[in-house]
Image 1 (cartoon, rainbow, N blue to C red):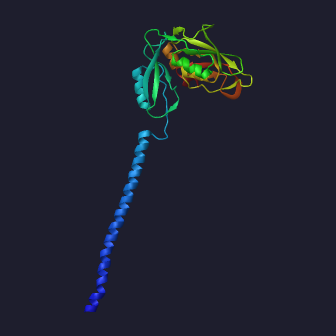
Image 2 (image 1 turned 90 degrees about the vertical axis):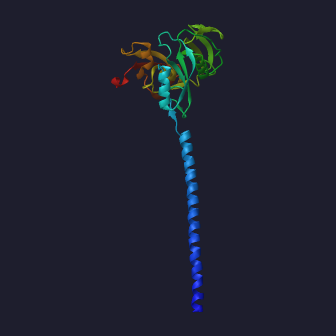
Image 3 (image 1 turned 180 degrees about the horizontal axis):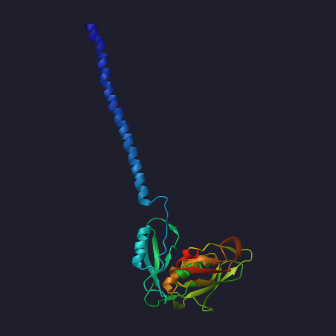
Length: 272
């Protein structure tokens, strides 16, 4: 009898160790799973908070009231801030005249869009000194003061797109001169014979002001703006969309300063 009892004792110890090992293994697995879930959750929250890797296309706020622009900005995931005003006689008072970044730009969620609105009364601004700047720098300087870039006048020079003169109503205008915001300034810029080519992009689908900006950005000039009969007010003009252009978009290079004619309508789909 004693011999049988002695042989059964070790089996009891094995049975006691198995539950402990099982409990330990389960807790280790649970801990690993918890850590993995915590890491995954943190990554998901980070991506949701920053919209990692996602960009937003800036809406066109032109001709909207500030209230309308705020609503559109909220839907798009950007913010707006009115930072300046100009005075355009034919335009409704208090509506958006320009914006920065421009419509169609890609920005991150929550980006602040700076708006220039049309003021109730004329505003005088100081003419900056643009001579020596690049065309793009000069354009940005003009727009920051609520002044429009009129025509690019190209002349032979060692540096392409270097501003040589600034003209107001056909005459040189000195830096510091006070002029009405919304005025047009023509720029005489250089053109090197070895660097004098550009391309005509596709302007179709762009609104009036965005299309004009794009023409200048590509070192071209607007020859004519042809509006359909449905364009009756200046507000209609700002909402008009390009449905045709001449010359057409092409990869073949043309000389900088060439003219482009834009055809615009409030309902471009009817022109397709």
